[in-house]
Structures are given as C-alpha cells and as structure tokens.
Image 1: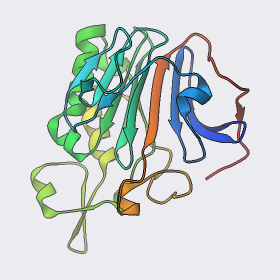
Image 2: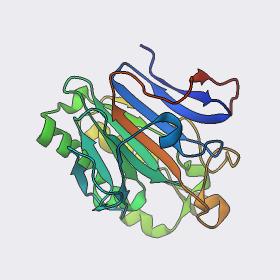
Image 3: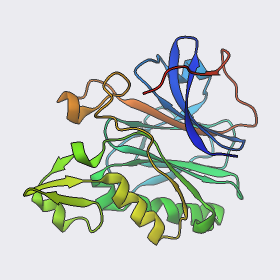
Image 4: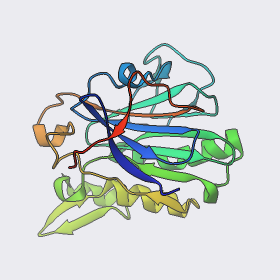
Length: 239
C-alpha cells in the first residue's frame, strides 16, 4: 500500500489522514474542523499535560484528561486513541506493524534537547520488543526551518538541524529528529506534508500569529474498522 497523507472531508469538516494498512488510524486536524473526536468518533482518548520532556507513558486503559504529564504516549490496546496537541512543534507518530503497537510524541526543540526521540524508541523496545529497523515513523505538519529563526545558543544544543544563513540561525526540527531516528536504527521515515506557518487558513501557528490562538490535534489509534459519524471522502480541496 502507498503510504501517504490524504486530505479528507466529513461533510464540510476537513482533516488529514495518513493512509496505511489497517488497523492503524492516524489523523491530523485542520482549522476547518470542529471537534475531531466527535466528528470521527475517536473515543475514548488519552491526552497529556505536555511539558517538553522525554517522558513517555504506556497506556493500557483510558485515563482522565490531562492527568499525565509528559510528551509521549504508546499503546498496544485497540480502541484507545492517543492525542498530542501542537502549534509549531511536530507530532511524531510511530507504528510497529509486527507487534501491533503505536505511539504519538510531541517533538519540539526542548523535547529534542531532552531526548524525546531516544525515549520513544527505547520504550518501544522495552514494552513491545520492537526492532527499530521495522518501525514506521510519520511526521505530521509542523513549522519549517525557513520560518523558525532561533538564537546562537542552539549551537550548544544540536548537531544536525541548525542552519546558519547571513549571520542568522534557523532550526529544522524535522531534520534533527529524523537524523536521530536513523541513528537509532529507524529506516522508514515519512516527512511532514505541510508547514504550519505558511498555511494560515489550515493550521494554527504560534510563531506566525505571535500568540497561541489554538492548537492542532494529532491522533493515533488501533482500530479494526474505522468508526465515524459520517461518510468520509477524499476532499476536492488542496493546500
């Protein structure tokens, strides 16, 4: 199967789905969507109080909203949906098709500095006996390097994602994260489909808007058959 991000519509509500073999369900919201959980019937779900850490929780049952502090969730249980909220940081979805498990991680520069990518792979190995070379890593939309100017202190933090141009520094979160994944043995890595900053009609971006107006929702779950409240179709719209 050709794995890819596809823009879909449920009535007038638009969202992205990463199309791959069942039973994995992978979604990313847009501004042209209300409550993604109600629209697609993604219940029960688990979300975090995100703190830019390397803390990853293994989920075996639904827990009260935001009762967990950390930046990653993993599970092998069907019909529990994992949620990460992002504005310019990237959602990193990881799937183990051999051991039927999945995870979702909040990846920004602080999380990278604190080792969220390394922790994600280690937890897959610890809990599911995953082989890194068999994992599938998928990045959702996030801010591109050209729109993410940072300070010179980033030279002390990172080896791969920092770009220097005209005495200014720009940070490529995807480049840093994907390089770390490859060093850990992950081979199949799908890049982000869109830049949140340059698509204001579709995505929230704190860096673009100057303030945090709202957040984009990333969701992953294991489900034998999709359970939705309406007919989903590929959308005629494109970014």
